[in-house]
Image (cartoon, rainbow, N blue to C red; front, side, top):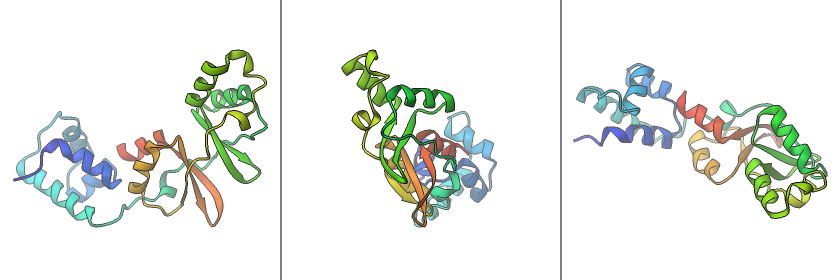
Length: 186
């Protein structure tokens, strides 16, 4: 007896692999995996067995994807001496919802749309121009190595606004929740 079909997506995400990768190793189309996961299609017993067998095999391995494979290479940064208003303007300009705060080359915090909204609720809008990020930022984001398996990032991104990616002690990218979702889709 096979596991329930609706667990395929959960298993795939837990393993940190894309629909395309699962389709490739299971010998079906990416479209088929997408339809199965969305409940629009029921696979034959043979296809379902092949998918679950491949997922079980992968469960014993590490993720084929690494943090460096899908991080955004351009890190938008801001300084702790900047104001909340400057952070909001930068977030709007780049269409992002969080910015790591760097003091030189050292991450010292993160400012997010959620954090800004909480601060505004506490002090009011008049503080935007004067409130320094050093007074309002959240703790710095976690830092992972470029070669960290992708499946290790999924639980981490649930508890932080973003993840910084380093390679040889240099920051080379940033991963956000939307980057993680793109990796899982694709």
